[in-house]
Length: 75
Image 1 (cartoon, rainbow, N blue to C red):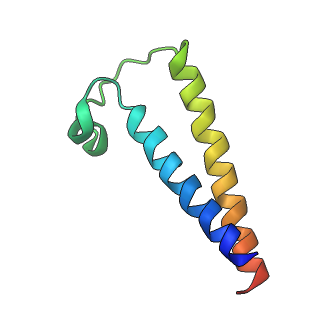
Image 2 (cartoon, rainbow, N blue to C red):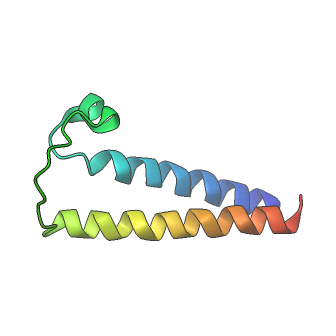
């Protein structure tokens, strides 16, 4: 059981990292990670941006639940 949770946690964390990196709009990896493209203009999320936003939220909830489950089971 512990091994399955560990593998699920690794897959979820890699997917979460990928979804966060993909959300940086046209800035490349460097600008997205450092916040170099953080202008003050708000834009509405449409299409794939909205889907990616919700995927990131779902992945973060799954990640949090997996971590809590691993902690509660106490290895």
